[in-house]
Image (cartoon, rainbow, N blue to C red; front, side, top):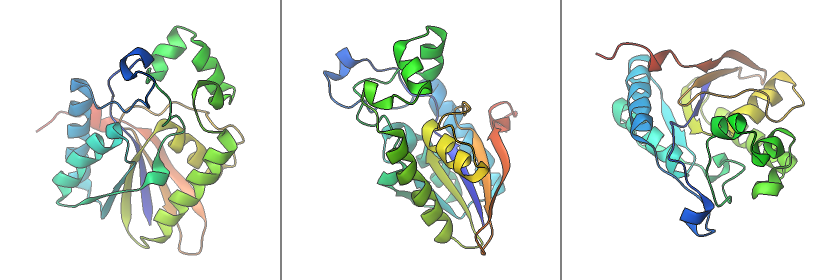
Length: 202
């Protein structure tokens, strides 16, 4: 089978002042909605058998047009949530990196609990079985799992045998492909595909 792990589209920036300390769950920007539309058109041409999404709003708003374009209902899987689902803000990774924000350093160094995140080992131990379960539930099929950058990082790292939890930056609506044999072996056929974002829309 082929598993497409897809990062959500660009979400709205949300600060702790705006959430009042509640978990941040931003939807998509206008550009994010356009990214999701282009992703949906691309996958409609390719074909997918199932669409599964994290329940966080930025993932749901990315998955919904994909499912609509394919004539499918999408499924929610709470285990696909990002490690920072309880954080009271959502600041784009690229902004934190550019400003050398303390949260960026904590993220890279695996100190995720410092900003309301999940322990990295516990996160990996949640994500890897979740995606393996999705694979085993769709033998011979093609499944799109719309999720988050951290989810994609730790799962591809597990397949490749990489020790680091965060080792690359998936683009918004990027597609990474995992091929899984019925006998168990996993291989990665692509990482961070974003051709749909630059292809000329019909």
